[in-house]
Image (cartoon, rainbow, N blue to C red; front, side, top):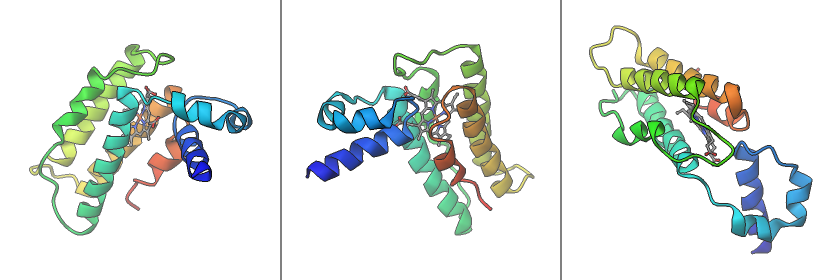
Length: 145
Ligand code: HEC
């Protein structure tokens, strides 16, 4: 059980964008586990990841995605970890991201759905490059090759 808790907290720290020294965290594993409270934004991000993974699988299976997940609009308001701020760069990236996500569900678009999907993933990455680089390698796995 202890090993499980330790590996779970490690997963959180590798995936989240807190730039903490991991060796320190290992020593205080249980404390860290108890204290780790994902922000509303972190939860939303994980949900966006999971839902887009499903969209990707649908696209690969030849199904046309039709319903934009309205929950994603929370990106404009969700509370973030205290070390992050909703500055202008963040706001413009959120807008661009939401527009690109909506395009995936635009059944009248002339652009191939794979391309529209990858545009969206690239916007996830662009925003992450500005301040939260930790999850980028994970996000890259969403790209349709
Ligand atoms: C507008 C900027 C922006 C966009 C667009 C964006 N992210 Fe994030 N992401 C963030 C920020 C900021 C955090 C840190 C949130 C916090 O800790 O409060 C984050 C955190 C994350 C995390 C870590 C969550 C955790 O458990 O700590 C993942 C995974 C993630 N994003 C995936 C994605 C995916 C997938 C997309 C696209 C579908 C995406 N992000 C789009 C800014 C963005």
